Length: 244
Image 1 (cartoon, rainbow, N blue to C red):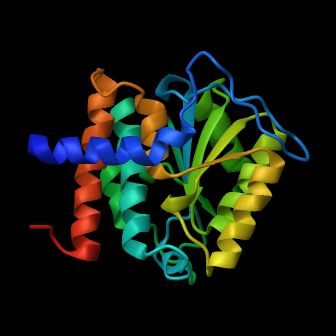
Image 2 (spheres, one colour; image 1 turned 60 degrees about the vertical axis):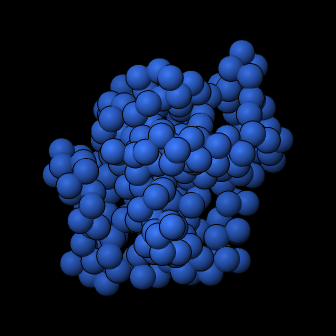
């Protein structure tokens, strides 16, 4: 159980980091890009979104150095828990699990057992959208939904190219940058610029929580803030040590 004082601190923290990006729910969000730009709804909602978690594998995790591994795993856990708690359809995929990429991270098997069992295992295609079984699985899971939350390893390859492809296919795409990483900061920044030029948006995990929660007093809002607070406290304690 989270103490009320800690919960208030977490809520204040979330509000502070997201205040500048707030948009009125009644106003659409538009953005300037060079090609394929969509007009986004003010918010993504659990009821109109599908989540794609790409190539969260032990070997690829070691290749992602622009974000600390503990932060990647913690933010990945938050996204997986969002999907489970809010009934967001989710598709997992992996690439050559028996190769250097390694098996998928165990947390996903625990948090999303059904999606893990049904994960799309690719033998070669680097861009999952180019692999028809993955595309079919996404189409089936989305069931007409056009808002896509995408995160994975690495940002500069395994997130960038499917994000760009899905924008071209007519989807509204949000890439969650701090739930992944790249070999270095230049690769991570380059990937972000590529998907934004194509028309995808960039959010952090906390910003996505704000966008989907909207009102912390609602049932979904309570679920979201509880998940973020629990995982945030855990990762801060792991990285910085417990606060006294």
